[in-house]
Image (tube, rainbow, N blue to C red; front, side):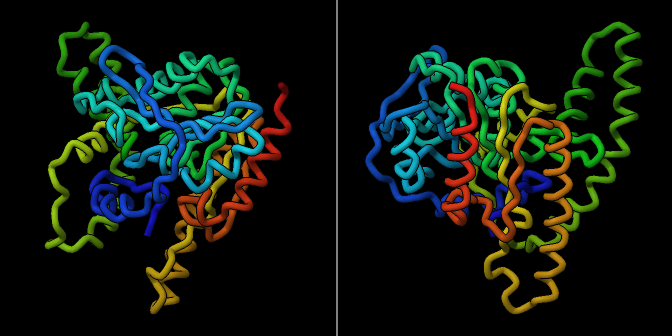
Length: 330
């Protein structure tokens, strides 16, 4: 099953091989490389079209070719581009350090491409973890864009809600705090760090419970993920997630609420109902928090849609995107 967000790195890596097989077959957009910093180039796909520029960002582990079937249906109204983030496809693969794959760094990459293309206030649409790039741009450089579209991408990496928390982000926060605690700092700063750690620990401990349940579902003899460049990049992106609040520009956020479970529980309707209810509760809570934190946003929920919502519910997504973009000032 394709899942919108895993409360832990191991589950993501376990299913990543399945997800990689789901990429759309390549079509024939124009392709070129754009340098975003010395020695780092990103693959840019250009499907052409007339009208307002629209930039598409793929989810983690995928390339801009994820949109090969979807983008041409937008090219009649917009000039459509796609960017493959660093670490994947034909883009450069810098060393998988936290700095090279932080949300800030990935967001700056997108801004660098926009600047080099001389795009005037494009609309940017991102799928899945691309929500973090959207939120970086929407909080740090909202004047650069006309609007942002989150395609099942408005989860904790894009909008952090302290009332619900998130294991991955809270782990990263705790890890950084502990690293700072061991550094040479004034006693006043150390005391403040200790207070912050003590405040964060109860939330982190609470979030470990659901994670342990999910871990229990993985067979002990399940094969380990290979030690490849792509897997190391995945880990670096997880470690680079940040806490974002509300953005400062128009927003459309489309959620699969609840997500489709496909055939996973085809022989167990009771388990399906339980899983569906749990997913709806978690997704609805995040969508509600996103709406509260972004009061200017249009939030659309599509029941039983796939995480790849632009594929499973293409017509609804196209309609919503067109209406949103039409509402934006020129």
